[in-house]
Structures are given as C-alpha cells and as structure tokens.
Length: 349
Image (cartoon, rainbow, N blue to C red; front, side):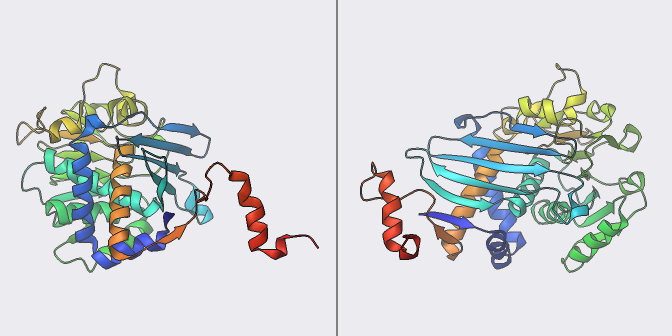
C-alpha cells in the first residue's frame, strides 16, 4: 500500500510541529542529502513551456529511493483563483519500484525552498546577519521570512511588493511571530538600504531587473529565488558580477536562473561544494555573495523523505492501492473478474 498525503495532511504536520521545528528538521534532511551530492542521479528538469507559464518534471534518485515532482509556474493563475505554483510528487523504492508515498508538494515546495535559501545563507551571508529585505510578498514570502528568522536569527524584515495587498497579507500573517519586526517600504531601493541579506521572490515571467547595481552594498548576500525558468530573471547582470555566484546544479541554473543572461564561461560554484568544505563560500566581510536559486530535484527528494518519516510518526495520511496486490503477481487480468465478484452491481443482469 502507498501513503497519500493531501495538502490538509501536510498543513496538519506543520500545525502539530510548529514552524520552528518544521524548518529545523527539514533542514537536517536537505543538508544530509547535499552532503552526499555525488550519490545522486542528476539531470536538469524537463520543462514544457507555454505563453502563460511552464510545467516541469523533476526526477532524481540515490541507490535506495527514486523521487519526482510535477510542478507548474503560471504567474496569471491568481486571477483565476489558482496558485501560481502547484505541485505533487512521489517517492519509490529503487530495489522494487514500489511507490511508497504520493504527496502534495505545493505547500511543501514553499517549505523546502525556504529551507534551502536559509541553508545557503547560513554558509554565505555575514555571520550575525539580522536584517533582511524581502522583495516580492506573494505566496512563498512568509516561508522565506520564517526560515530566515528561525534558522539565521533574522529579526528585522524590510518588505516591498508592487502589490500593496500582498504586503498587507504578509504583515498580517507575520504579526504574531515573536521577535520579528516587519517594516514596509515604498520601493525596492528603499527596502534594501542597510540590510545584510536581500531575498527576491517575484513571480512575473519576464526579463526583470528587480535589483540593480546601485542598490548593492558591501557585504550583502543576495538570495535570488524568483528567476527560475528561461525568460525570467530578477538581477541586473552587473549584480551577478558583483561577487561570487553560487548555484544548486549548474547545468540547470545556466538554463533557468539569473545565470541565463551571463556568458557560458561565467564562473559559478555549486552549493554542495561549499557545504562539504571543498570550496570557499564568503571570503571577506565586505564581499557580496549571490545565491542564484532555481530549486533542484534533490531538495524535493529530501522533502519527500521528511514527509514520509514525519507522517508515519504522527499517523497522518491515507493508505491507497496504487500498485496491485495479487496472490499471483503474474495474473494481472485476474483483478477484473475479482472486482466484479466483489461488486455485484458491476455484473450485468
């Protein structure tokens, strides 16, 4: 039998554990998998682009488990009452192919993206960073804010969005978080002044320049999350040139990230190399660092493992028959007459 987790099930896990414990425990799973990066099958995600958005498939595997995520990105969806990003995924056993878990990954993607952002910032931002600008206050913004608050100790958040309603939503959702001060600004340039970290998480599928070189101050860490598909950027090219650039999986980021606007030989460092100590991260307090984050399948693999373990511990989820259980595994056809016997209404009189 396969475990099925709905969005309500995952929300229940978050509610039971609380966001601080969720971010801490999920970070442990993501970090442990980054530290064994070379054990994974890796490929850039398979994407189907349209005029309104993109649909992607993100697979990966180690010697024990295989996972994939189906995910979309359609910036116009909120006008139709749908989320910009919607996702689901599966975890299977490599030895047999048995599907172990099928889960929603819309809420979970926001959790794992925020955890990955904070994990990278912990390695790349100045020690003692306390102020962050959050540019783009949509669906993923609260998760980014909370992950940085609980994992890095960010206590002051400068926020800005072209949609004032999105900012009001963010302020309302974070109003009761102890030790986190949220300050609204009227522009990106105003919001980023004097901060340690700048997180951009905008949704428009466009070659945008959310951050320009004149906004960058010595020692800043840039966490660029929103530029995550071809034709979608957030950083001016000269911001990319301001300091060393770090990525998840270089072949994918060169296609999808802000890196897509740079020459093919523009140097980058994959994050796993910093986390394992093979390459340096930040070298000086006044150095600008950039994490060009597009999301990679390993992070979903980690999240699915975390979901399975946590759901089992709390007794959350449904058991469904995705793969058939048969007395004779070679007699697949036998399922049909057996179903008719079990359900007399299916038999014609």
